[in-house]
Image (cartoon, rainbow, N blue to C red):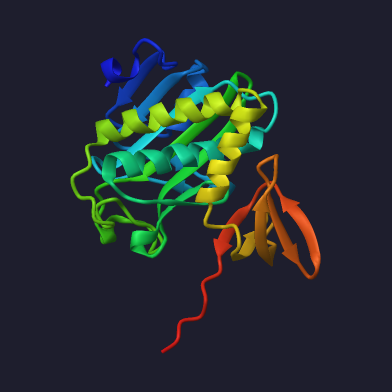
Length: 252
């Protein structure tokens, strides 16, 4: 994997592959080396949004973290750019079409828009740690919740995880370059995300830190990467929080 990633023209400087690890995000933050990749085959204490934790079964997932330089503006776009990188890699390597749920989930329409990847970005003194976990080979009973899926369950049972890692990091490097580039490059990123975002135009429940839940209609993603919603005739932007897509009632 080192030879495939650390090449001329690539920003990646080194790769650490661990048989098991508590949290790849924690390890990447501890190392504090920009463009240093941390990968594990078995994550035992992964961290998600709002303090959630999870464990990935051995040999079934792609779990990695990298420390990237923070852009001067638009830092809220970093998880959105990472989602685009995963979307691109799943299409190119697994032949699976994916959509994005604001701000940090990758969903597979082929399996009822279940979640195949979660993303966690954490601001550090040396930049932004970008962590992601992709479910590759799990069966249904190996997943923690019914709303999760894997590439195997979506019809792609033979995905090479090394090839997938290389593809994700290649796309992530490209989108990070767009994010840290000029206005035209950022505009390309913004347009690509808005086209891929399944949240825009949907009724959503916003789960805000502290336990509040608000019902709203998601209308767009603004220039700062915030979700713009309307509720009760008012429009406002949401910078953080969990979003649940409200599904239409099923008819008997």
